[in-house]
Length: 353
Ligand code: ZN
Ligand code: ZN
Image 1 (cartoon, rainbow, N blue to C red):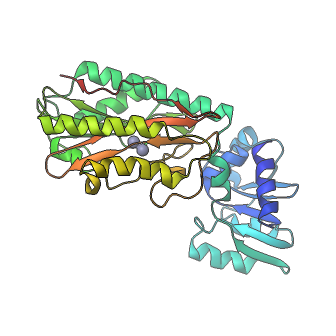
Image 2: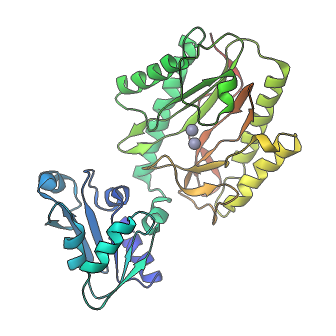
Image 3: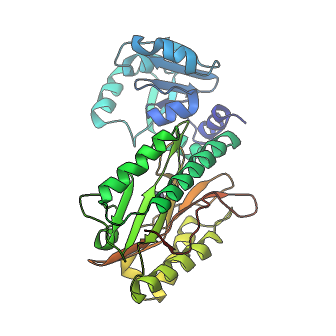
């Protein structure tokens, strides 16, 4: 089944006659369009794409031939709304602003009932097809190569910012680019899960968290390794071992039918049992695709079960305030029989210069 057919099935299940798609990532996923002004109206037999005159040529090149392409005004909401079929029309309530929703209400005709229907396309996007998996694998492979080059060069004596800039330059030199701002965080900065690399100079004998991803044809990868720049204190290597054991064990829980919440709990219980429960303050993982964070979510709040075709991260971490942090993150495809780990950079503690 094509993406559009899967969406039509979902709309029938939700008893919707059409869906207004305003989230550009979803527009891209359904129609192929990569510009910055476009919306779709999708429904039973309705596949309509709207953009303004600036993007008409691009839309002709990119938008799937099964769509009607409509040139609207720069503000596309009115044109799209005038084309709604009568009945229940969903809109992306997690995306549309309150202001845009108020305007939309003014445009719809008699017999149209607007229904909040957020994250329907996101639910489809959570299950990747073979082509998408190929792009994600390619992005992950590039990230592995970039990490390998970083390990060769070493990090001590340079600022975190320099090391991060170099990572991103390397990605671009390989024909890719970062899927999110790279993190290079040594010593106490490593205890901040989303540290932004600054002027601090990396010294010998510290743990350095490096979190990076590449992008290939719009698809992201996401990978973290924690390196040592020389011998580290016993406590740091004990925490490293705990995170590594937890990460490897949790990978084994990634399979179709596993409850997202349970996979997170499995890892969390191990870290709690080792006395570091309050030092693992984020979810175990998240879906990755056209966006770096998408469905499904492996966390205490994660909903539903894993399905074959999902691509998720598994990234436990322990953050010891003011001292150091350890995070190890792999990208994993959920295969029919279990985990298919996409990241391949070694996970034993690697000492670099
Ligand atoms: Zn990451
Ligand atoms: Zn991640």
